[in-house]
Length: 119
Image (cartoon, rainbow, N blue to C red; front, side, top):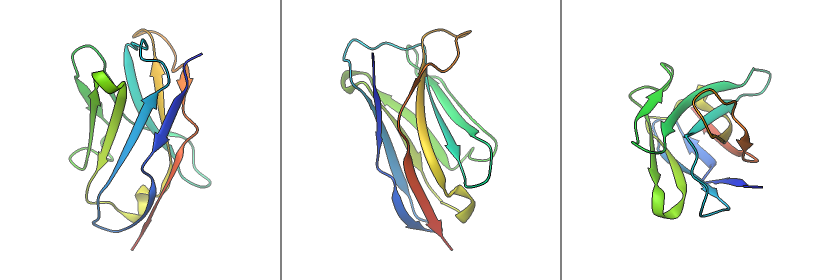
């Protein structure tokens, strides 16, 4: 069973940048897409964005578009979430996830990493 592990979370001030990483445990893992989600206290899980593994095309939610960028390193089986111009409302636990087909559910999930942004 493939495991995903996020890292890079922490404390930041408004306007700062952080980069989250998500590494897959199996080098042979070739998902259709990898996604980032977040969940703030007392709120529902929110889709942040995703990247298609084969062609690297990305999609980001309106709430982070222009500030967050998703990228991948195929050789390292790692996906990144570059977060710039952080806002206090970005405070959440961030999760990465993987799916094996476009019609598939997000099957693989990491344990999450906390991002806290102070004003």
